[in-house]
Length: 102
Image (tube, rainbow, N blue to C red; front, side, top):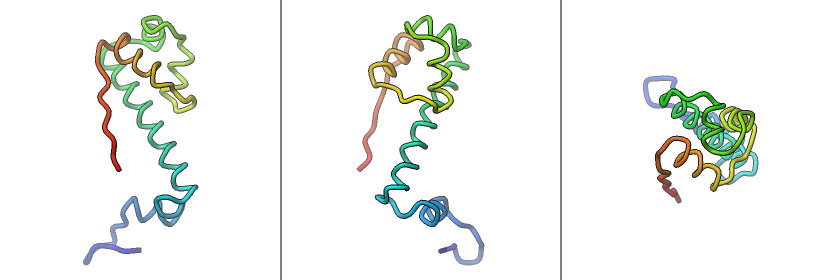
């Protein structure tokens, strides 16, 4: 693996390349998708906690149930875009802003 001159630092991409293959490889793409879902769950949980809401309170505001909110936050459930928008707009009073990286 490549390291910067004078130190033994290995980048995350180098570790992932070795374990899952280069970007575009099936295993690597699956890992990337799962990581994105994990990040989304963390963002939603942090926003909920910042607003002082319990999972049940958020679920009630959004018309869903506590177990679904828990599954999203713990990366155990895929989330539909319409549900994500409802959580952000109705549950948090915010708005969703997306970016696309190519």
